[in-house]
Image 1: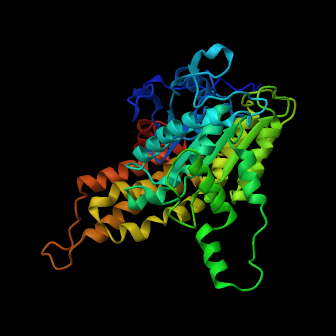
Image 2: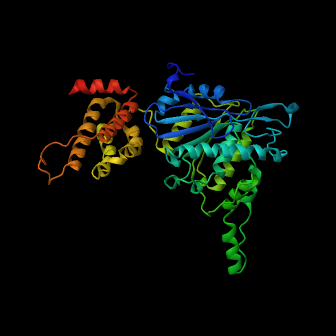
Image 3: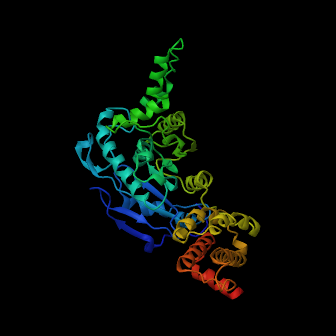
Length: 425
């Protein structure tokens, strides 16, 4: 355990919201800064969001900071599985994403898993689609523990954003984080991937047509995953699910879900084309390991999604180089899209904001942006062309978002940052 102070979560950031179906309400932790990403995290079998979510949010990172502090632009959504009757254990009802006969042999009587997987993946897909009204698909992270991991992986493989109604969101899901879990129907997926390609012997044009129709082994495997829960067939031979990076962590002493099932899932996902990061925690049991696994998850998200660094290293020169990304946006101003532009640059602000130069950096930001706005807004033909052009409400809001991003990167309240800035002028 770390000697750092225990992380804390602000209860003011917490809310409950109505889910997009008859499931229990969603537990939502709102971002501390401008909303740039969403992390949808699924609890394990027999648990619920109200029990699992608060503990996960207080998970210990080696820096002593909370996950919320490390990812200030992240919105965290914890859904709760419906209560379902178990096929085993006296048929009692518990919160579970799908029923399963045995965790020791997840392939045993697999047919009992189908109904729950069908309903739960549809539920998770709808949460994703609701978030697409606010952020792009590649800014969404799916995750889960144990059966929540299994459901998150199955939801990834059956979600095809090209079929959504929002064209600008047609990208792959940003990442998936799985802890102590497995992949349902993994053996069938591995069998399809392991099939030898039928070259058709001689160059027969009819054989080539059949091969194109069937798609690659990877497409066939994804087709099986969808067909297995009665979803419509894929409409593309280039599905996006394999483009999503996946983190899988597992304790080697897990006596609930054996580590071999996690390794199997990693192999299947790699066979489908996913970039898989595998981490095994020696001697650890069925849970996520603190701080080791939390550190690994944060590092994975930083590397694969370019999320904010926990380091205080950096230089004003490096920050300025990143901030120059603003130039083409501001130089060709569209006042109606300033808020969207601010969201697009939030990642670069988080990546390299230099803590030792807070005041100097903020002053350079404001001076630079205001100068660019005035230059772009000026009308040379106007009678008062030489007079300063007042900054509009939207432009001021745009600057406020930038200021908020910089404050969040330094772990300061915006008010504290403003006090320092004003005192320096």
